[in-house]
Length: 246
Image (cartoon, rainbow, N blue to C red; front, side, top):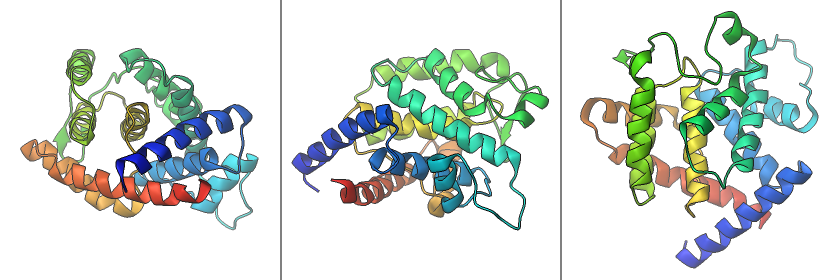
């Protein structure tokens, strides 16, 4: 797609997201994006809710009747993701800061009983060490310093897919929160695309293995080629889906 066409799409998207969010319009691109991002981002982390169930929860606040039990955490985190997306839209004019990132995490996790019961920090950095699979992450006492360094670096960059891929990979390797790092990271990725006139990236659960391999490439080699290639593919996916609403 041409640059002019991309610009036209981005102008449309920014305008409609804000208008439809204010009116809580459940029929347009805002609702579609809410459901798409929430379903895929939570599914990547193991959510059992389907696309239909996600849509019902967003549209009506209810879940379809099912012979199976719904996991409370899945429902709470899905609702939290909807709130986090709204917070993102409402703060688009603000710079990306540690405080804003913590606010995103609070919206995602404040209603999750299991996390509170486990004593996890909500809307604040982790208090206990954690890992990504077999990889160690930044220790709790060093998180604030590492995020400071990351944000300082990022704010000096020309924002494009290259710098966004590096930011996302570095953010995930820091793993600043006890839980919810992938979801906050992918929301920040979407936000920074939208804010900087770049077709947004929505990582599909269907591409989960490719995504994890790309993050592994950064962990082991500091490479981002796989992540950039995935971002480009996901941009095209989101753009094509949103053409329906134009």
